[in-house]
Image (cartoon, rainbow, N blue to C red; front, side, top):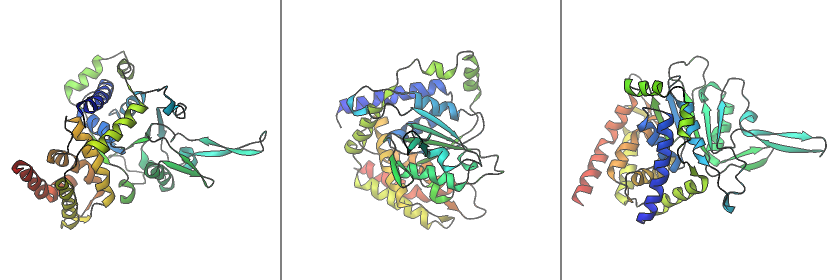
Length: 334
């Protein structure tokens, strides 16, 4: 990757960070991982407390995507940048994906797009709707398409989902099963921000945070797609990184405290995320540090621990530590 390519991606990352950090205070780590997942073409599950800024964060990301007038995007100008879907027990799959409507004047059915047709979709409280509706969204996440009346409709390639669930209120919920959780690249925790950041939020009043964020320059769909392609094609992944990743997955699967391990799909999804983090830290190659930082948010929600075992992250870190340490020593010798 040339210095010019790195610089172009740095500009995109800096613009997104500026927009998101202005809209939501005290979330630098979460913001970096969400931008990273966006560049890696993954999806994110936020487990958060009410009023912690999840909607503002997702809306700020969507509104950061500006219209492009190039020929390549003329078929995508009618796709909204951001849509929010509030999941409830009475929601239907068609409320997410869209439905066919009969038009008497044409004597034919016409497909009307649902809110899933957007660049950034906030699936709010995804565990409050039925498994059938969850499956409709997760099919769109996996295939970037929806099927209505045996007809397939493609989503835009930039399609990105931020789903949320409340960790405290479990009454009347439909928890996502492990295979569906596997569709998310990361699961991130959001808790209360610290005192100084909370004070800065109050000092911003009365100007809305999203309005303040909108004063900074955004990015276009074309720039984001180009950045994704540059990452995948030009950031080097040494064979030892792949070997360490596979060995870490095997160690997790074989750990006595873990009853359900990591899928191969999880490892494939993690590769572009590793590349994205490398570029975000000024490198055109993946380092052991990238693996160390990204394994926890990528693995935690995919494993199931035995009854009576404490924190999942501690068990995952314990299982993966030997492989990461061995990789770090190897890179130092090299």
